[in-house]
Image 1 (tube, helix red, strand yellow):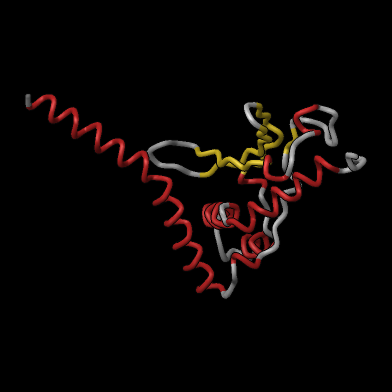
Image 2 (tube, helix red, strand yellow):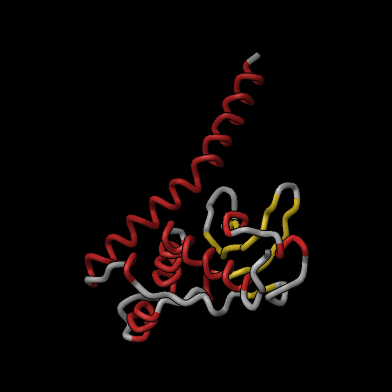
Length: 165
């Protein structure tokens, strides 16, 4: 009887850890970003960024039917985490999902998500590489950043397309 209780307790404990670890990771990133913002007088939300290093798996524009019929709401961003217990964002995957169909379209590693202000701070020795990656992850996970990336990817899908009549 005690073995079952121990087993249930262990499963419950691991479940709580697994389901809450991403939330606490994101909270830690936000707190870290606030400390750096205060210390260096920057506003992470207002920083310019570049995702030119995004790797597309498909040449765009494409005649693939899934992409041709995709709307902007079908472009989905998925975070790629390195671990379940101690999650760290290692990049984002851009997927097009329409109904039952889905297709991986692009991937952006966190190390290639560049912020010129952070580049300058890194070169000046104000932040180290670990801080740069944490700040990049915090910026990448902001809703406005995700929205901008989705809009740009959708524009890439639609580039040089004739409007459907």
